[in-house]
Length: 624
DNA sequence: GTAGGGTTAG
Image (cartoon, rainbow, N blue to C red; front, side, top):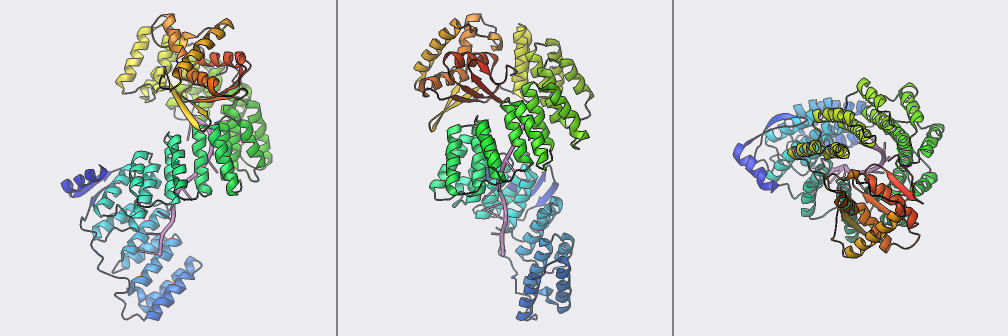
């Protein structure tokens, strides 16, 4: 598909014009540039003795610093050995290796003949030092000169696109490699997979990945990471197994990536299996692997296991501490998160912006208002970390949840950094909790000004209208959302039973044991109502009568997953479920009752945090 | 004469 599209561009335009985030140029693409190169490394050097060539190359290799390279450069110039391409190339390479791009460019400009290697060295040199403008400039010169693009120079520019996350430019280079017949080269494909993955177009990365005739460990790792990142962590783990089945043994980097995928997935059994596998490899728990495992266990619902890893790590950096603080935060254990902070300082680690986001978040989700305010004011005064919009969002969340909506609004109005939709979203969420319709409408207006693309915000506002019984306004909001091409993200809940993951949607009847699940829900409903549970229909958005509303509530995906868990999980085994959106108010109450009546621990991971239900109480203390 | 892939929040 892509291939034919690219050819289309070439045939119709001959010249390729493009502009992207980083560059705006016109390429004159020499379509016949894959002719064999006319010059060879040794062709022009008949007057330079062979031993001179060898001598210069070896003295260049033994140079320890730039000064020495320049000295050898002078000797080469006196000898006239520049006309030997191999010597000139080696010198070029040495300059680039030492980051002396000005010297390299001067040398390059003075070269009468250039080998394709010379081009790849200079283009790659600029990419290495982060001078992408010059990198692409020289790349354009390469194409103009008619030198062939090869398996050496193409990956260099593709990697530059990856570093810039410049998809448009990446696609263009991809087109050129196709035109030059390089699309089956291993290095080209491997870098293309990496580029597409980094630009978050995992489908394109995958397309190239499948056509590669051999895939090495790094390319597998890129693919595994990209799948996890793009919201399909199940696929990511399937790829990991497939890789191992092909006899490729994962190294530490691959394991860190899989651990990351497990964290995304939030599946405890998988996490334990990966942990056992890592133990089997004998790899030590270094700072990166250890930190990834803390995150994995915490996001799979066990903050205790995360702490167990944390306590056994020999070296911890600011990321490790921040991960552990964040873990306590989203598990609602704010006090423990706060205890870690002085310990971190004592161990000589200074906090960064993320540490403060984690701390403020922990305060917000545990209702620790004064502590949060103290951290917020000390972050700049004592630690020199400037509050950004994320920190303000945490503060708005903190004040908003506590019902101090006026203060939250005041903070937003007075803040010196640019406001984003997440910030307004936090205030809107608070308006919903405290049923503050007037403010919600004002906030919504500010959000609409920012042309919010998040369906969640529209859903939240229509929820607020629905709660207030303002059905017309609710319909208008919904309308606005659909006109903007936004669709409500369907709620999904996952539950892991043994090796398998089961997914439920609202009103899902696709599960083979669906009948039993609904029977179980009915029985539960009856028991719960006797115990005093009344379905809270506030979260049901439709203007329908109470009975129907209750029916809608009973088919929420999290309830289906819990009913299934009760059916299949052994006594004493906690029910762990993961939801892609926030758990609704009624399901929250439902979980509390089930945990009491059925004597089950229920651990719910929603889009924001964890809720541990035990004996009728939730760890979020209904702070939600 | 070819790298490249990895950890925290949102």
